[in-house]
Length: 311
Image 1 (tube, rainbow, N blue to C red):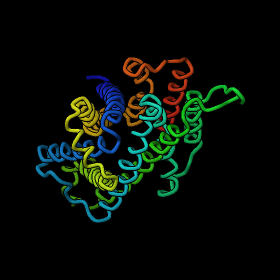
Image 2 (cartoon, rainbow, N blue to C red; image 1 turned 180 degrees about the vertical axis):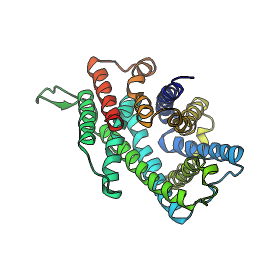
Image 3 (spheres, helix red, strand yellow; image 1 turned 135 degrees about the vertical axis):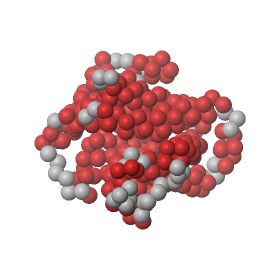
């Protein structure tokens, strides 16, 4: 079938859009920490089940100490810090703007790769950064009463969004370092047969870090009663389950599949369309107005993301 990779990538973009909307609903009903404890726990359970059914072992095989260190660190930065910022961003300015702010992730990933891996910041990367930032500026800035330009959204929500993009970008680079060590840990003769397993094993280690951090912080805040009460909020639990299935489980799995059938740049560009796809659902569910400025800003930001992969 022609264009199967492109169709899968589009499905991933829709999946991540559903994850963002359901996460906003779940965060409002259950709270950020309760939602993420449930989310990390179920993602870990589903990942273990998938690996057991597919590879016969419900835990990350072959990973050595260095792989565990970098992947756990990636989980702390990406799943704990990044998702904590993202879900608070959803509560403050909504999932629509949260997805827009996540277009910052490739920029922060480029900076992290420059700092830790020695990769150069080429002219096309700088152009892509500029276009992405321009799109975000179009969406969040406007005319003020006493100044020519002012921020049209709560500053706290924008800062949460920046933190979410930073956590995602830096976490991605840490994941790459960890997966490189993971690949070296696998016996050479077994590598061809388990190469597809490594991303799922690595993601499971990251989930362990996220679950431990959220649970530890949650207990320090005395949230046991909140966790107990969440069992009775059926709508909140349904939203959480949809967020788990459409985000870290289906979304991540199919994104890995997409790059097997089409070029990574094309797949990444199509999957980055969530800030555009979320406009109409956010209007329907949350009554957020769709303005020409917001639409143009989302389109420009997605173009900026695509330039990271296509230039």
